[in-house]
Structure formats: C-alpha cells, structure tokens
Image (cartoon, rainbow, N blue to C red):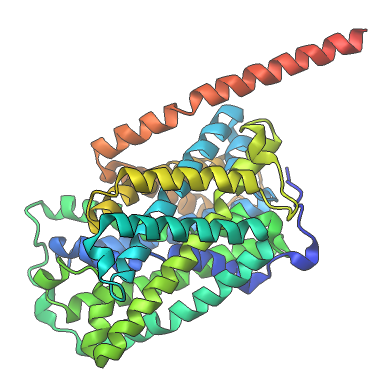
Length: 447
C-alpha cells in the first residue's frame, strides 16, 4: 500500500533535512523546561530518562521497519489502517491529530516562556504572553502553507543552530557537576517505582516526534531508506543530548533552585559562561522551540490529509492549496491550537506546559501502541523479515507504550478517552456518506 506525493522530486527533502525534521521535532520544549518539572522528584528522574530513551529507540525501530512495509505520507494512520481496518485507522489518525495539536500548544507556550528572558513583561502579563504565543503559532502556519521545501529549510537551519550550544552544555557541564545535588535519590513522597513511573510519563514528551519522517515520507527523497535512517539517527541524537544535558543541569543547579526555574538551561549556561551564556542559551531555546513548532506544524496536516484521501477524514483536510500544501488542514489545526492556548492562558507558563504535555503524550502514545501491534502482525506474516530480534524489540515497544499510558494518570487518561470518542460522530458521518455514495453509484450504473 502506498500514497503518492504531490511534491516534485526536486522539491523533496533529503536525508539530513529529514533527520533534522525528526531531531527538530523532538528537541524542542521538552529538553528546556523538563528539568524544572522533574526537579522535585530528584535524581531518580534520570532513571526515567534512561528507560524512556530505551523505549523510544525501540519505537523508532518499529517506525523504521514500518516505513519499509508501507510507503507514503500518513505514518501511523497508514500502518494501523492496513493492519486492523478502517475503524482503527480512523481513531489512530484522530488521536494523533489531537496529539500534534496539543504538542503545538505546549511548544508555543515553552517558546514564550524562554522569551521572558529577553522580554520580562511577558512573565507579568498573561494577555501579552498569550498574544505572543498566538503570533508564533500563526506565523509558522503561514510558512508551512507556502510549501514543504521552505519549511524544511527552516527546520534544518534551526536544528543546526540549537544543537551546538546544547551539546556544549551537555558535555562541558559534566566537568562542573556537584554530586551532592543527586542526593537523596528520591525527593518526592512517592515510592521509588511510583516516582520512576511519574518521571517517565513526563520525559516521554521529549521523545514524541520520532515518527516525524514517517508522517511526511511522501515528501522525502528515496523514502525506502531515508525515512528509516532518519527515524533511528534522529532519535539516537536526541537521546544522547537529553540525557547528558539533564545530568549537567541537575548537577550544576541545586534541586530547590531548579524547581523554581523558568529557564534551567539558561541558568546552567550562566554558571558556566556568565551573562553571555545565559542569553545565548535562552536564544537557543527560543530557536529550538521555534524549530520544533515548525516541524510539528509541517506534520499536523499530513495524517488528516492521508486519511481524507481515503474518505476517513473530512474532505476539506484532503484539499491542496496552489502551493501543493494541505492549507485547510494547517489552518483548522492552528485554530484548535489557538483555542487550547486561550483555554489555559490564565495559568502560569509552567503549569500550562505541564497540563498540555500530559495530554499530548497520551494521544501520541496510544497510536504508538497500535503501530507496534501493527508491526507485530505485519512481520508475523512476512517470513523473510520475521526474526526473534524483530519480535523482541517490537514487543518491548508495545509493552513500553502501554506502561507510559498507565503512568500518565487516570485523570488525563479519562479526558483523553473522551477526546478520542469525540471523533466517533465524524467516523459515523463519513461511513454513512460513503455508503450513500456507493448506493447512488449503483443506481446510476443500473440506469
């Protein structure tokens, strides 16, 4: 099964740009704000990072393999529909779309949080921060409407700009850590297992995006090899930067200070290099969030586009603009992102961020779980590609996804299920419309 792209070959993305889409989509808001969210758990949160990295690499492996079974843009929708039928395909597309909408809101909030370093008034005025957030959201929506090539160039540039200073902190900072900051292991009042589970739910947010190249596979040159390579390399690079960066930040900033920080990486850079480092990393964080928001805006309409082409999403999502981009899908998605920002703008920036990332993580991991099961089913029927290693890694990816869903918490899970079920009227409407169309076609044929 494959989906044809509407993008000319000369306009398609190469391997490094595809990898930058993966890395840029992952390394965004999570790495810059999560140290503060995790600080009250203590150094046990490092265990959450390590376990989540392992699980995410197994999921990246699943997506690398799935991209070789099924070609074209649409990622998880295509895989799950092929394996389990239209109903599962629809809810995968619907759930993942909700995930990206939530992700865009979280990333935009984080972007503005780091802009407070340069513009303190944003911290004091919810209205001003809200307007700035909306401006960033809609500015990048317009860039993506103009075409995938322009969006890809922006992504490659922002990924390069943010990686260098992050790598510098991650590795230079290791020489300045204070071992006392890692004691005691668990600062929370929860058991070690509960604390580890809670930290994994938060750190998983930083790895959402490993499937970004799969979502736009139809826009990538030589997708049969470049999509798989981009998924694996992008996830590996992100994991290394995350883990070493977190160790450096936690080892330099005392836990009680880290818990209150709006810009933990910038404060770490200030310790290493003074005011110059503080403002450099703050600027890097802004660029990073900007790049991640661009990457997710690029992806937000691709799965609905693939689903709409098969009458599994409203037809307006399947229409292309004169730039050959799913402009309607981008606009509708951006409106929903804006509404999500408006609903939470009375909360502090950190509270907004935490609320939205848990919802986004849930709605992304559910499709991860189904995609893992889809790969188990597909590979089981393929005697050439079937192997014990393949089955073991994919089974671990499925179990890991299920554990993350459990760790997110019942309140968020219930809210997420309600949002998923809210898509059922659309599915019912589309199925009825398709049935009526088929009936009308038969009547026309008989005449």
